[in-house]
Length: 278
Image (cartoon, rainbow, N blue to C red; front, top):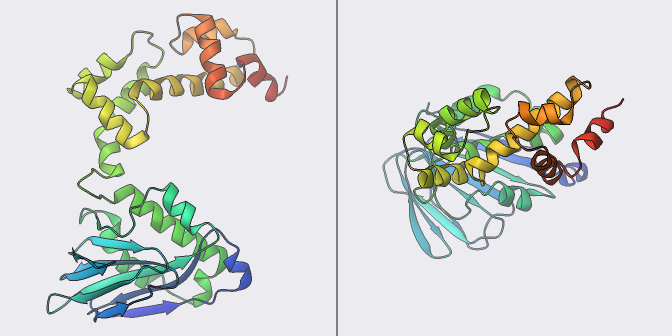
């Protein structure tokens, strides 16, 4: 695809109160040189589709190859220019009352290159938006807000920065553990050793993989999964005792189950049950 396109969207005072709102989307068949000494007025994402260019952010030069992009915060001085005969790029600009905390909470690197595999949806997003464009109001207001959040979620899911594995790759690697927990959570002997053996890695490395994907250890994930299952059982069959349910989700000691449930849910199993009626 070589056809350039550019869409800019009307933003009202109501839009500016939204957590996120979309201001523009575009594809350039050949990106020219840009110099913004005072930065851009909103959040600015740009990535390479074909060829390569050089970004200079706060005086620091960085290359931008295919399937690599940058997210720039408002007001960050920068410039970029093509390094190849053809440098095609795709961009999205956005802002919003919560744009800064949302990008921070998604842990999206700013002012550093983010890359992704050529098989993932981000590699074809410039084609998808060319097909999605109808009328400008299709992306106005809340619709535009949802588009921005969906895009940022893809960066979080598929993006890789500083050599780290993407979330999607991490989750794919851990699929055997998810299945093991789904099918064997009721086994009180299920623990870190069994999980590590299933993946044929050391317990220490499994901890590292899990923390990269979830921010918690595999054992903490197992405990939280057991508590979620116990919630389902508490509501589904009110004739079952707490003792019986604790055994059904892999706890050997009732008091340990009640203590863990309270720690995770902020209330006892019986209090939880009461919240969902008699």
